Length: 162
Picture 1 (cartoon, helix red, strand yellow):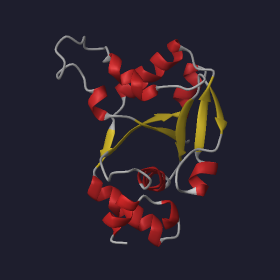
Picture 2: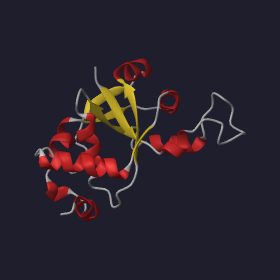
Picture 3: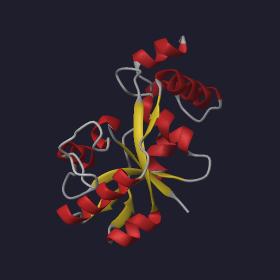
């Protein structure tokens, strides 16, 4: 069963220990900026068995800085429960295979559906991948031929020693 990855900022999803005015089951309003839509669509990446590292490497390799990569995963059951349409579309990353085959758009989103998705993200663990790990994932993807070094940012090339 596939899962869907959305890049987020972990600091926006902390529970109320960091913000004493926040009720226990509530979210910071700033968290919603991580679920920003365009034309009522939200970009996500489909992750199946063994593809998580490749998706992370493909997305992180084009960034201007080698920095933490933070993301949330949610299930296809979540998509069904919320009642969102999902379509394959070409995404933006340096890996053509990932961009063409793993990118999805969630369609026909309403404020209520975004809130349901936000509650789901809040209830799951936001994962942080540190720069050292990102460089290693990109290196593995390049060396295995899964990632074309042509699309990698200059900063990442320097971190890889290229």
